[in-house]
Length: 301
Image (cartoon, rainbow, N blue to C red):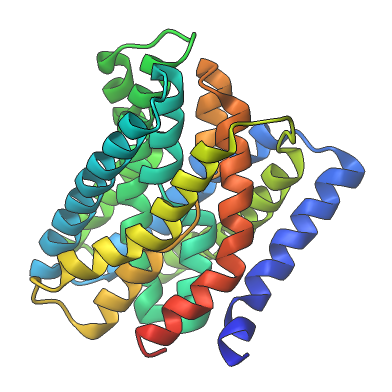
């Protein structure tokens, strides 16, 4: 029960966003854009500016890449056995490969492991954001009716403010530039506000999810991969990495997160089975209310 109370504050904020969307019907895309382009970059800058650069960064990046490769292979094989069409394969990839490390994972880590764990969670959030805006767009584009090229996907990554903010933060740290306290106070205000906002956005997105009929065998497959196989794969990968228990705990928790809500936007944009993607996001998010405390129990939180 204590583990459930760790994620309860996060669920309360989700619920506020859900109820608010049901009653007022906000423009979710605009609010999400504000979060992505105006607020998250400050959070990324602060994290990369204040977190000391060590070999852990390299291992975290390697972990994120290996986990995506493993999940891609598992999903592709499972989709083959389900005789999925190209659009359904892409929809499964969106749901199974990309976890909600930002507006769900980071807050859970903050409440469970405090500020030290939260800094690691933000690093993962930035990496996953880059992957989703490159590989995610690629999967959505090749399986949908929308038009996009690999070049356009990578161009989109280069235009992401969180990437620029992360690079600036690392650069200023390396050359030992001291940012004046009044400036950092302003950065802190925006950075601290970004997490509650992205949590509200997830609640709004869940409220807007379509409940039309979908093929449940695909939802079941993606749910098993995302909720069960993903954290197990993370444990297997981390077994060989010389990382601290804190970092390993953060990475496993992030790997256990439900499908990323932003994949629904990609599916809608490129018409890649949006009902399947959105319903998968909803189902895995509901399951995660019970599965995440179990994961935290097994890793000793």
